[in-house]
Image (cartoon, rainbow, N blue to C red; front, side, top):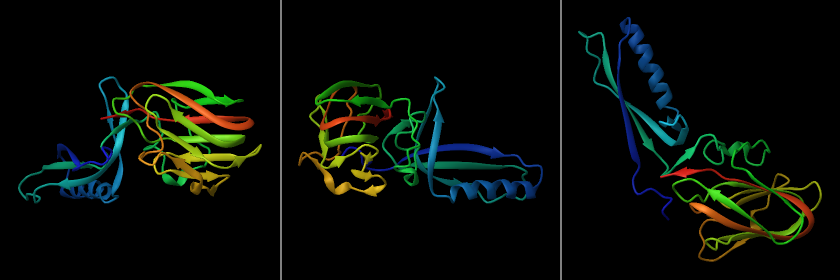
Length: 230
């Protein structure tokens, strides 16, 4: 799909090391190489409006052989971007949360859409202000509900989790890879969606009319989403 890059983008930054000694130059180079050796990491950039955007990237270092007659060294740092989008760092919906925290209940997101679901169907609107449609995010469903279903009426995307939650239960859904945890136990098998639909959900740019369905006395539904930028 269009979420897979054809070829990685490359960003480069050039600077010069002006050390107080040859030993200091070697120390500086070792520190840069150590960061590059960590593999893929979050790359953050500050925009002109002071907001921070981030994406995954791998860093590499280029420099000429150290000249013995110069006390400076030009260095080029390359960032090979691994994702075709940038995320608003303040959202923390996907890139800013590592896999180890999946389902840990410590999410914070300015764009969390919360619904106190007491009847079916419940309709609401998510206004998405990114510049690229977003197919990743997290959903939490707390307490009693049976067979919850979410539909984006704007584009027809929908998913349904077949099963029942009781008071005190917690269903955590990772939309990016259609993973689900019920009270910390894998429960991905219970998903259904349209046969020709690749992601579980897609937020379009602008207003998205959403419909939440399911049988049950009441539950809390939380959709953590983030703004993507092409």
